[in-house]
Image (cartoon, rainbow, N blue to C red):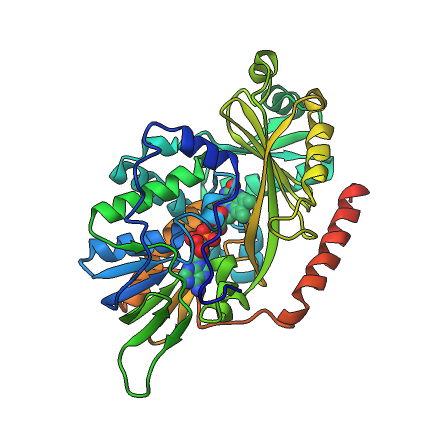
Length: 445
Ligand SMILES: Cc1cc2nc3c(=O)[nH]c(=O)nc-3n(C[C@H](O)[C@H](O)[C@H](O)COP(=O)(O)OP(=O)(O)OC[C@H]3O[C@@H](n4cnc5c(N)ncnc54)[C@H](O)[C@@H]3O)c2cc1C
């Protein structure tokens, strides 16, 4: 946790950071960037300047509601500035599974919400003119590592087409996947056409710039240390090192970084934080660049300890979950490089230029949660590693909830905080599950 006087942590040394530094408007300040140094009165205070918090703030600004965003670090310091930039229209639970567990109407509503997430990213890109975020509606190819895994994802694609009339998922044969990816490691795959790629740090900085220009203040280096509501008071008071914020409503958008201070740490108990690591190679030689990932989509695979990859800036970007390491540690990167070379032997001699990691927030039911923890506090979190589109959507819905509206949330609506059972055992639990998954992956089960 942060000490009250702690300095903000720097952004990790990622490819995204390097691309931002090299971009023509690198010098353009994202926001005032200054910490809060006075007392403030707002209608809604938003904690967290990632996709969730900024989307919430924009939704409030559009309704004419006065708000301010507070972040312990800089804009995009959390997962929003570190992720793989895969914009997907899926949840961790498949739509047929949602149908089995919750019925067909719910599966339909969840399907609609999943695709709405991508529409929200598109419209934010348009409204804010975020060309530098380089959003491309390329589709995402899920590559099967065994025949059994292929059968399962094909069955899902068939179900979605037959039951929901969604023709955006199509099957690719082994040769097509090999041609597209340049890897012989897969037996086939399923293409989801309604997906894309983005530069994640440019996206979150662009959102921040856009809402700042529309008059919403963002206070960086401003950890919320305490949230307090005196008996009978209709307002909440947030204490930060440089001043207090009095607000009628608070939106907590701190996701897997909620334990930075005690004020937001209760929200961490909704989650099992899982470390996710990424590597990016040096620029590929021209011959490899022309042969690997020719459609420039994002790619995921079907192993339980999933890896994903895409090409950015002529480099291979390769990511995967690593339950064992902590953020900032160097563990996991060598394993990731070995996994990359196993799929792409031609990359054996290509140097890895960037390595970084961050936390994703997994939930007990594998779905994001948005809801009210009391009558003045709303939260949205738990994107289970797929939050670029979903956080952009649920931030807006959190704003609506804070204003007393009732957006359609289906299974994402949380009746209140529901801490993960035996939360204190989460670290050994995650390790145990991950080890079991790695074993199953290794034996091809
Ligand atoms: C390595 C990695 C790869 C990923 N890849 C993908 C991908 O390819 N596609 C995809 O869809 N999703 C991906 N994700 C998930 C996605 O990045 C997240 O779901 C999403 O960014 C969550 O956004 P957020 O705004 O809710 O939280 P965050 O971006 O994490 O922001 C939370 C913010 O809250 C601030 N904060 C915390 N506590 C306090 C406090 N007490 N006071 C003030 N501020 C506070 C933090 O400083 C932080 O800036 C990935 C995540 C990681 C880590």
